[in-house]
Amino acid sequence: MARTAYGRFAPSPSGDLHLGNLRTGLLAWLFARSTGRGFLMRVEDLDRVKKGAAERQLADLAAIGLDWDPPVVWQSQRLALYDAAIESLTAAGRTYECFCTRREIQLAATAPHGPMGAYPGTCRDLTERAKQQRRDEGRPAALRLRAEVTEFTVTDRLFGEYRGAVDDLVLRRGDGTPAYNLAAVVDDADQGIDQVVRGDDLLPSTPRQAYLATLLDLPVPEYAHVPLVLNTAGQRLAKRDGAVTLRDRMALGESAQQVLGVLAASLGYTGATTPSALLEQFRPEHLPREPWTLDPNGLLQPSSYP
Image 1 (tube, rainbow, N blue to C red):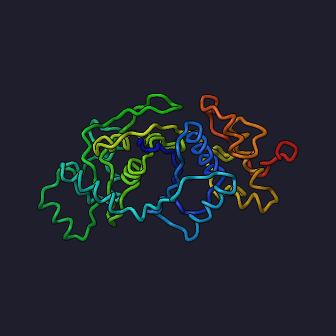
Image 2 (image 1 turned 90 degrees about the vertical axis):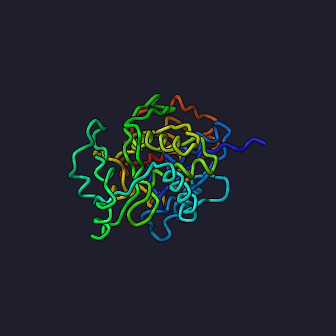
Image 3 (image 1 turned 120 degrees about the horizontal axis):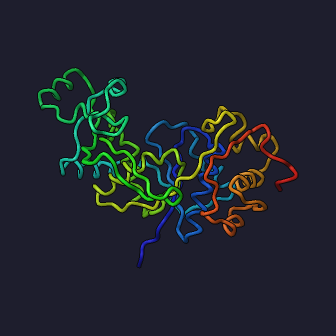
């Protein structure tokens, strides 16, 4: 029996989702459901976690009408999978210890012939004596990928072919935590996720992830990087921009259904009051390619939305 293919949404529980996050979650759901895929929810809780945020995020997604296939997966419960992937890469000679501090990396020059901003490979060829000296100094060691390419090409549903930089990305941080790029690649493959829809600010990191997947003999998913939501200053929307979360809007007397209508309208669809109704109209090729600018002070026009 063929394994079900899935799309997914994977928020980090660092706080409540704002309308830009909800819009991306809605798009991930629409892409998956419109192509007959299942839809999974993954909580990426390896980094900064705010107590209760994950539960509120899931509740907000459900409130605007999204559903997903159980169970919800938490990355913090999947550490053995990440360790196994790192062990595989290490056994193949594809990793090395890095003792650089963040400041040292920022001050260092880009690697010769490498992409702008790439890790310069300071620790790539350290002798055992040099490594031991850094350990004796109490420096924690991150683990980096020994990349063999500086660029890699991916295909995106909205951007077409995209060739981007690859460097010696971190696989495990100095505190022992698996890095985002590794965890996302391992999780997507393990969960049968073959479609990744997310904000276009993440497109530059995608060639790294795709390259890492090939090294692990994992399938590279189909990508669709969708436009972000910006504030009136042209910056990426953030919770400090005012009443931009679902709870904020509901406190102002708006319903979750109304907020969904606003999100649908920002995508060029009017009259849809549920995700299922929006799904009937959804055509990826008609999606806006420019970011949506959101002014929370004039968000809803009562005559235009239910």
